[in-house]
Figure 1: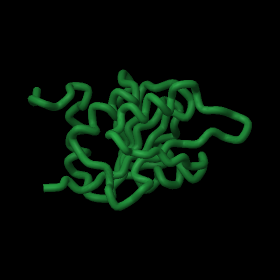
Figure 2: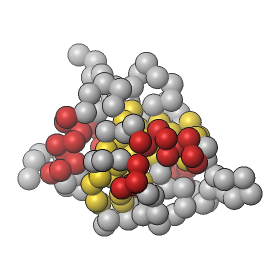
Figure 3: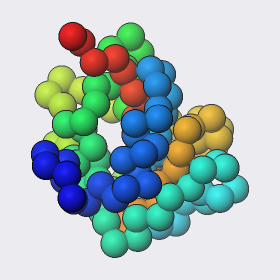
Figure 4: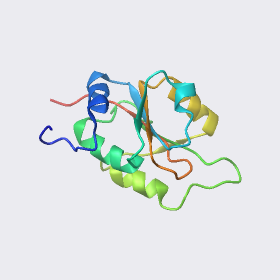
Length: 139
């Protein structure tokens, strides 16, 4: 057990977060996401909600301050809609001032292919996928 680190962050995820560098991206996906088809590095967090994991990770690092698209969510397919409250839940887990960019479904999959890691969560709400891009700690 480590002080100051939310226990929802399991050891393998902590290792990945530490390994990642500036500009690297990580996906926190819903349970429906084709993680193994799009990324070589997949972690399972089936007992966690993606929003809880996002909230736990954000105090540990900075979003990429040089890329305005440092947080991306999958946009709803035409004729469909995002579940009520989903965007607010993600927005509330992010640092103040962070903006979410919405990415078309297949473009989101292409971005996920370049991610450092996909973490599959237990989130069952459709479109419950988010990509965050690591920045530099100011110091």
